[in-house]
Image (cartoon, rainbow, N blue to C red; front, side, top):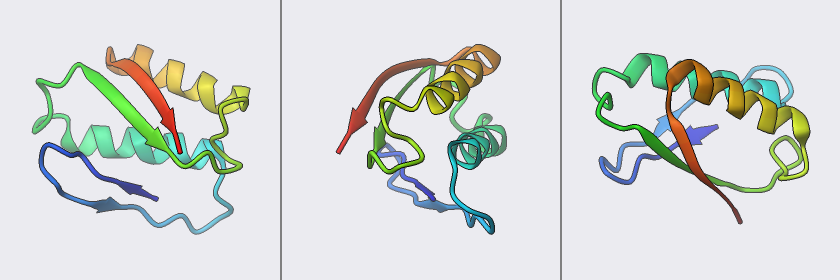
Length: 84
């Protein structure tokens, strides 16, 4: 899994040793934010570009629920989910 913030053009790659699931994706997103929130602390809104893979499809309620919980915990606004 990778995260690429366009403002810094840095690529953050996270290995997933088990099957990629919506749980794993949301866990890595939280891990990334915990590690870098000091650097990106002024960011209050995220736009997520997703590949519409089986683990994050727009109709996957579990993935959306994880994103809502993440947004609540971090007080970030998830502005838009863009699926490609």
